[in-house]
Image 1 (cartoon, one colour):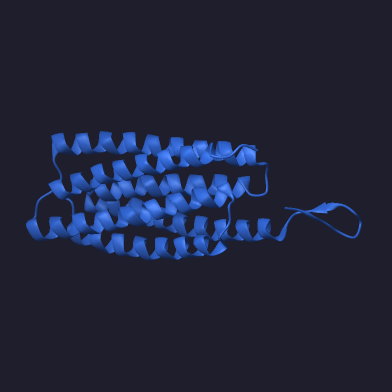
Image 2 (cartoon, helix red, strand yellow; image 1 turned 120 degrees about the vertical axis):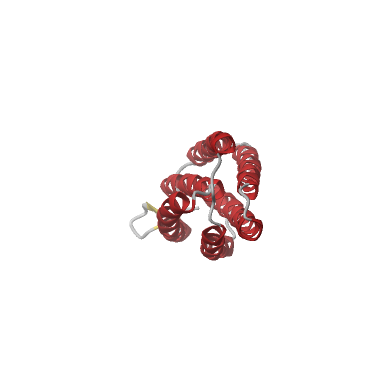
Length: 202
């Protein structure tokens, strides 16, 4: 929605600025978490944390694209949404390849590190999700951000559970299972984004 200023020219609606501020904050938080996860996934030798890192990276790209799409025509927002869905599908394929590699070669994930990073990630994602839902907007850009943030929150819960099992049982397979669950979550998110992208015409 737009309004006119005193000169009769159109000015951007106030919510465009607020949406960009919100997405900028969410983008910054996820950039920091992606860097932390990238380091921790290599140290802990965890498929689940590596998958979480890749998912966080796709989050960052999706939030950046959503930031760019705010205030633009809905057709641009629609194709940004489709692009974000494709990112999730690529993520799922990458995680499957990683699980297959570790299943063949083995690995020793560190359960404590998995749990600690999952808790930190959950706190960050809870903050992001609450900020996004507070806007209560029908903007496709914010819908994309909400889907990615909610899925990441669910993934953090999965990583925490896998880390606990790895720590208690001293086995690697819960880490592989967590990676497979992340694939399912990513594909579900992609399907939802595709549906939202083409739910309306405009």
